[in-house]
Amino acid sequence: MMEIKVALAELRNEKKRKFVQTVDLVMNLKNFDVRREALNTFVFVPHGSEKKLAAFFTKRSKIIDTITEEDFTKYKDLKDIKKLAKKYDAFIAVAPMMGKVATKFGRVFGPMGRMPSPQAGIVAQESDDMVKDMIKKMGKAIRVRNKEMAIKLPVGKESMSDDELEENIKAVIEGLKKVLPKGNDNVKEVLIKFTMTKPLKIVEVKK
Image (cartoon, one colour):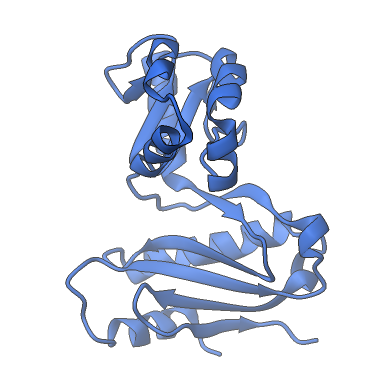
């Protein structure tokens, strides 16, 4: 077990890759019933990253790729909807569209974690300012979904500074503790890794 910055320094000393690696946080759980308590929520970090977003709006936006109700006919089968889901990191929607979005795309978007959410993804109106604010918020939002006794989340990129990564890591740990049913008592250990490295333990909670 080591300090966050010491762990980051060790990870940076690993073999360099030809791409910018993602920094992942892994939280192993305890005293947790995966079947009944599985999470589907968001945590937020102070230093966001750019995401490829699209919006379900009633009219075209100059700010973001837009899917209107008229466009729904382009997505005739599940294969087309899956292709759309994989094209973007996340989706936002204007509130009145959500029922139609859920009906058309929910079967695919739901299990893939792509459905717009009131916590991060639904805007009250399609004004430019509101859309810009939501795009900024989505850059700092990390979706939390787990079906096993571990949560793995991308918390930044190796191109970010150690200070930024440390702040993001601390924010995610605290954010997860707030949404876990027993808080800190659900945390067994926390590790961080780069895409191609082994994980290093930064937090271990005693039994």
